[in-house]
Length: 316
Ligand SMILES: NC(=O)c1ccc[n+]([C@@H]2O[C@H](COP(=O)([O-])OP(=O)(O)OC[C@H]3O[C@@H](n4cnc5c(N)ncnc54)[C@H](OP(=O)(O)O)[C@@H]3O)[C@@H](O)[C@H]2O)c1
Image (spheres, rainbow, N blue to C red):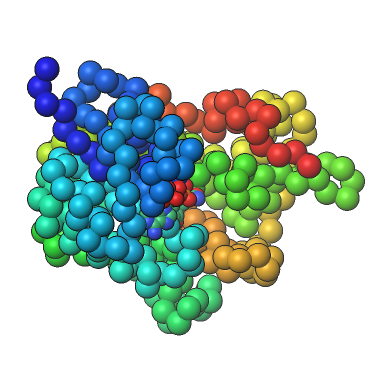
């Protein structure tokens, strides 16, 4: 058998990277093997990845030498940053720069940079429809990722820019699921009016990334946008009602009200949802589900995701 190409996966114990490691493991004849990058190879999650056949290596995106070591000898590298671990766009930029330099130094043939739009191209800082945050961002966790695209290009790394979308898993893990109101009815809150939300099952991001690595050179230098479905808030509530067997109403609030909810990151997310709403056409058009399905035939739509996660979506 020909030697398998190694894909170094940053964030392998998390949502995006975990999906990619599993996609590689589920296709043993595909010609690839995963190198799972983690800060702690001794964790239960890392050990589970090793059982799937992944090589597990220790590295930290804040330690460039460790990244160079993790990328040594690989064909591909999946690069992602972890905004919600530190809430710092500057740190994301520094981490992306370190990954790009490490990929170049190691001679990586194909990198995927998990990115999002720099929303300041649509909403300049002078536009006061939404507040400027942290001095120079509109949606900090988007803007820094978009700004970081050029770091990969400038470093000369053969890169695919993967535009991800809203994880439906946020309904389970991020407190965004339906909540019981004073009258006992479940309500699903979004500050998006009637606009469509391009979303995806988090594990499908990794599966699409695997499709990109398999497709190879044709994707290098390109931006690939993915989503699993693009329902409105009302359609998401209707799908949950149908699949979960409990009435879920859509509760549309304003982005201003969302920004004021007071939890860490509420302003950033309020601006993000306003960006989705105000630039619905651009945001959705950049993430055609047909593109994602061509990369990943098992792609779930929202109804399928709800059915697969029945029992995990909190209903209280
Ligand atoms: N939630 C959404 O809807 C959404 C949508 C699109 C994009 N995103 C973006 O997705 C990114 C996060 O990706 P994810 O959801 O896959 O992450 P995740 O599930 O939160 O965690 C990924 C893994 O990252 C590792 N990690 C954290 N800090 C690290 C560091 N300094 N060095 C090396 N590894 C580190 C951790 O592994 P170890 O502990 O094993 O090291 C963790 O298990 C964020 O930047 C977010 O903005 C999120």
